[in-house]
Length: 146
Image (cartoon, rainbow, N blue to C red; front, side, top):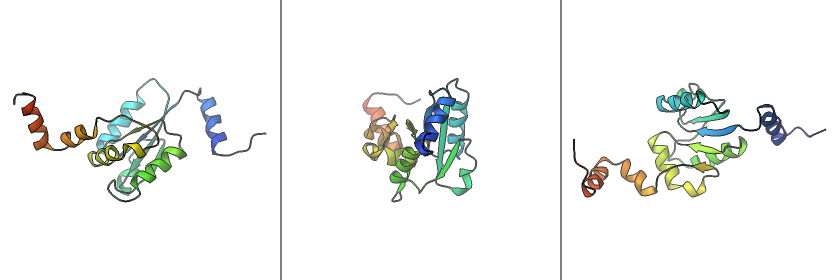
């Protein structure tokens, strides 16, 4: 008989669900954009386990995710470590970062994230989060104003 530990339980769940479950972690999952993103995933035909994080105890319970985790604010010590703890605990395949401040922090620490992420370059993230810098780039590229 198999010993009942976390890995055994996860493998049994995967077998029951067909073994083809995508495991996604969504940050800011209790806020409006996070909720909308999760609800969009829920209409996809693929099976998904979705874990959600939020830095606010007041928003966390709103996350329509399978599991919810309270995390430190993105710019606080321990944020990246807490994400990696959750990634390991739930065998997360992909991290979707939703709030801008979390995009900034994860972008700057992308090599420390222990799962897949999909973000533009560090420079692109910085430019997109700064309206003046965005305008300068657009001007350099000859993108006209409306």
